[in-house]
Length: 400
Image (cartoon, rainbow, N blue to C red; front, side, top):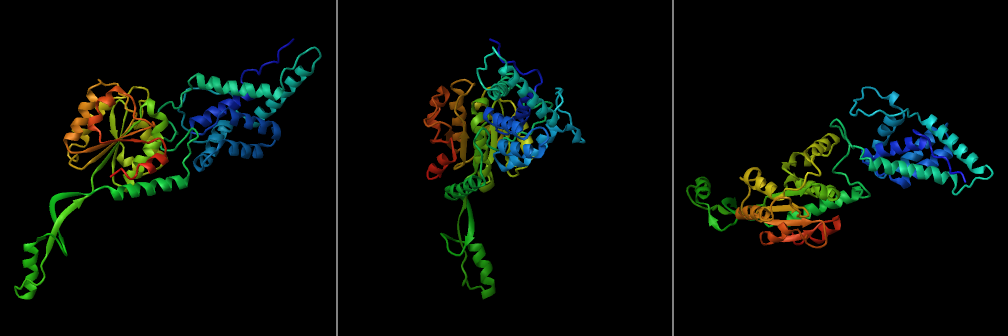
């Protein structure tokens, strides 16, 4: 029994797998199922029908408006690099020729060869030829992923950290609901009475200075008394989001939530993994250039998580002049820390000593069982699960 011949090196199926890898590098969700559908479309339209094939592939690979707009550029870069001018080389890798028409024609030739080999007498065709080619595409994709193909080289990446990926797409109505929810939570944050006073038509105390000034117009008669009341100030909100490797699948949600409160509550937003960095200016703009800057700030995935050191840096340097009684500090993390087991409790107590109230958002149903977090529970006012937008809706009444 003769085995079915395997596709040669640099075969069309391998090129299609390489195209899928490039799509994933740019944030598109393209798995084995999508590659199989793209292969079927290539076999259906043939090598001379690039326009309908392009449209079919675009409909298969794009799952959001952002991906739909990004598709033409990625497609041209892979299949028609000769049309690009002024491009910047960001990788030292070399790729074989990528002419789409030649690849599809070679794909058809390969399919004919497999069918001829399967139809010869005395040979066993254990599976249809299409299935064999699809298996090769899936294997190419798996090999590409196992090989650890870098997502960015030379410091250039177009992956957007604020957009959900891996099947967690953000629709416009969801973004609107998140913004509305942030507005509701901000409105119910309890304002803090300060030591200062402001003038009011009715109040608790007489403002003698303003009353005497008004009496000048009445010949010295105090017919228009001025009152003053305590000035109320909304609490300052600080959000610290964990973007370490263990939180990579939740970082997009956390940054979306942080951005909503940065816009509605004027919150200061920080990200941390092995170090702490403020990203508040980036939260007020949502452009590709800004997302690249956030990518650079959050670089360092896989280096561990130093929550205690980050909190100490936050309390002693970044928010030293603004942490006061009534301030809200929201920590978004799973609580697994590489610092000493007692350092997290010490850092949280230092934040509490300045009068701040700490809320810990965790991506699990139950409070994480991390030893450092368990030792620090007395310093945390409340724990709130946050794995989806529905969790934030359920917790909006306790966030005061």
